Every structure is written in structure tokens, then in C-alpha cells.
Length: 262
Ligand SMILES: Nc1ncnc2c1ncn2[C@@H]1O[C@H](COP(=O)(O)OP(=O)(O)OP(=O)(O)O)[C@@H](O)[C@H]1O
Ligand SMILES: [Mg+2]
Image (cartoon, protein in one colour):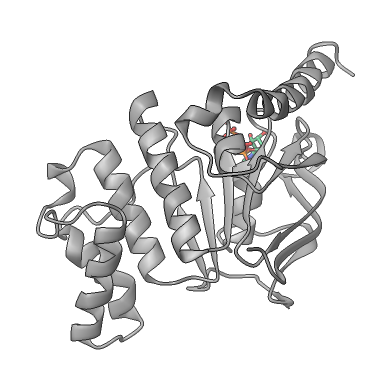
């Protein structure tokens, strides 16, 4: 389903602080995401994954290199990039419906169209019937469904997700992964998704970038060539485990190198 190049990160670097206190979070990061592609990033804790996605989202600024969306440099947040974080980031005083409509209202989409589009995405994430609920009346999984609906309703060019299911329990996480895989098959959004969870990476990704420990750079990229629909049954299949082992080995190597100070 993947088409033209949508997002390109070129020779990206980020140094925090100066002098003896300087921390190089990212160094020479190169990656691409094609249209309708589901791309994952895995890497050791602290390797710069959040820094990378924040720079792509325009929430942080690189010290070198560039981020191109449809060939144009990005340097500030914009509606063309929709972000979903681990925290649910809903407005607590607005209902699910109003939360999902929020971005559309900002874009001055007329009220009737706004309501209809919000409803479509609320149904898509399986929250039909909860339109008038407030965030505090929802479970963690439901809040994250609402946050995803809100981001998708804006129809961004690319969806940037930083461990969106990281705070959910294991069962809810699998349900959410399958939900997102289903949305991906139905709507073909372009997604860049960060995770710690190797199962999640292999379950969802068309391609997986593996980052090195800090200073974070791309260590390898893996094409996930598992035919058919992936779901929780896939987790125990040999071809799934083979990809998983490859990634585990790389991350293990990174931790060993870190421990031995190499
Ligand atoms: N605003 C900041 N100021 C100074 N250092 C920072 C800042 N943000 C991040 N860092 C440093 O940059 C490095 C990368 O952090 P980042 O949060 O991007 O890692 P991460 O891969 O997302 O980690 P995790 O897997 O734990 O979420 C860390 O060493 C962190 O301390
Ligand atoms: Mg992070």
C-alpha cells in the first residue's frame, strides 16, 4: 500500500546544553516514511526516540540536519503532523465528541460537517455510545481511543505516535494494537510509531528502524515481510519470532556495548 516518500529525516542531530554539560541526544539520523507506510522505531531507553519525534512534530529543534514533509522543511508544529503521546492529552472539561471536534473547529470546519466527521472517527475507534462522556468517565484504553480519534479526525499527512500504548495493561495494549492495525488497513494513514515493545513493533510495522544507544543513530532497518494479517495469534508464529529475535539480538548488543563502555 505504500507509495511516495512522505517524510524524510536527513542527517539529524540534537545536542542539549553546552560545553562539558553538552549531551548529544541524536547524531546523524536518517530515515524515511513513505505514504501509507507504518514505520516503527525501537531503541534503548534514552537513545533519543522522543527527541526525534518531537523534532519531527516541531516541538523541539534540531542542532543539525533537516526534516522534510512532502519535500518541504518543517520547523514548527502544524496540522499536517498529528501527534499521539503516552499521556492521553484530552481536554478534561470537554466530552469525547467535543474533544474529537476540537481540531476541526480550529480549522473552521462547519459545525454539521465537524459533528459528522467526529462521529465517524469515534465509531472507527469503537467509542460509539460514549460521545457525551467526559474523559474522567473513561478507562485508560478508552481515553487513548478518544485521543487517537481526535488526531485522526484532523486527517494529518503523518501520524506521530510516541509509545501511545505504553501506559496500558498488557491485554488492553493488544486490543489497541489490533484496533490500530485495523485502522491502518481501512484508512491507510502514514504512521511513524515509537515503541519499547518489540512484539508491538513486529505486530504493527511494515518497516522497523532500530536505534543505537545514545547518541542515538539508526543502527539498522528491518523490512517485516510476514504475509497475511497480523494479530495476537501471530505472536507465537515462527516467522514472527524470527523477526523478533533479530531485533532482540541488536538491542542486546547495544546494551552489552553500553555495559562494557564501548
Ligand atoms: N530538554 C532536554 N534537556 C536536556 N537533555 C535532554 C532533554 N530532552 C532529552 N534530553 C536527553 O536526551 C537523551 C534522549 O532523551 P529522549 O527522551 O529522547 O530518549 P528516549 O529514547 O525517548 O527515552 P525513553 O525510551 O526512556 O522514552 C537523554 O539522555 C535525555 O536526558
Ligand atoms: Mg521517550
